Image (cartoon, rainbow, N blue to C red; front, side, top):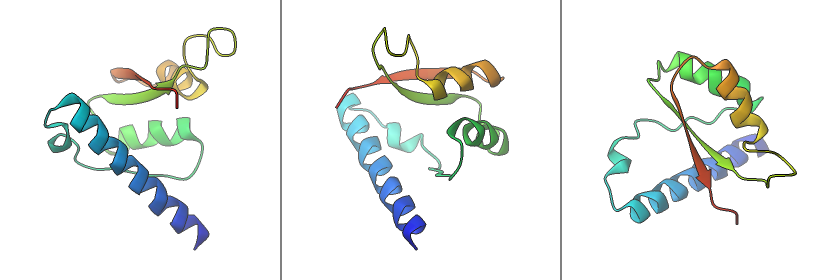
Length: 97
């Protein structure tokens, strides 16, 4: 039950962020999103599995910039996905909250 609540909250947050991106971009990006998938597990492994299972043409990852000295260039998940995936990847820097 607790896990389902966490998933529901995550889905709501994703939807909220997608709407915010759409408003900022003033575009029809919401029409391009066919599905939102949330999985429990190692983020890198789950991203790779879903990209294959869903036959994605491209993967878009949001990446927080942690600072040059603490984590150069990319976060752990973005870096690991980039090194293992065999599909085009777009990395979008996310704002620091």
